[in-house]
Image (cartoon, rainbow, N blue to C red; front, side):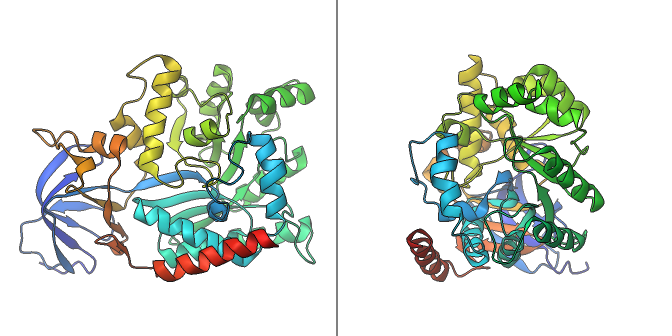
Length: 419
């Protein structure tokens, strides 16, 4: 049999496939993301003991602000969204540089790897620094850069920032694991020209377009006061949405008619329950209503500073299950297996979990408890595979020196806040 240069074999393992069917035995993980049962005679790069290991698709994080790892998790704890932005985030971001953004994104990439995620759809400043960090880590991403000058840059203006983003978008290639996209922060921070300018750039390069939408009741009320329309209605009225390419984060205060519009425009909703709760937004996306409307829903953690989950997608999936049931008085509003499917949509990569972790027990008589255990209890990710490359093996990150990064990262945070 011919050698698959990046095929690895796990023996005596448990594998859960894309349909969440459970398989027991020996498995080949191919470099193209596919898998097959192993006969035992194939040439492989590594032959690994899969005993007490669970193989699943890796997590996908559809809304992040990766460099905000610089903003400690207790940073401005207790402030609602608008105060948190205006009193804490925006002022500190005045100190942000390309190098700080790179270090923060690297730290986030390590957290992603250690918690079983291989993809992030990001929205933040200095996108080229974030792309560089994710390429170094070996994970995938869509990195959406703003087209406006924030934070202020020496010798720059909105025109030069937009030109720079245009150039970055032009560098996208199908084979790149990390792609550039366009960020239009929100209807309350972007005027119509900026929103449509973002759409124009994204369409020009066939790139993704990302926006925060209807995150708070105040945002919705202010938009209605100014335009006579709610945010989704307003964006639709200016023909903002690009089918299959627009990612709408939060969507917490959205009418059912707006959900139908989102479905018709083929937008993707990034549900971020932990952030909505931590910042006391008063509402989270109603997934049964979105599902009924036909909107495609993914899961995101938002920024490490605004979320109680950091970048841990298993934890975020758990929070999604809990808040949906709580909000709808319905214990079946979102099941663990449904949250897992939402959190792994589109993944072609593999995460290998430790079944010797007490949190992953009991397995169940027919190994049927694994997904529920992972979502409700969490688990230790041991190995992570992207394109046949191990980003982590036996719990040790292989692409980045974690100890060295920790030292650099903590020094950078101290400097960032002392400026």
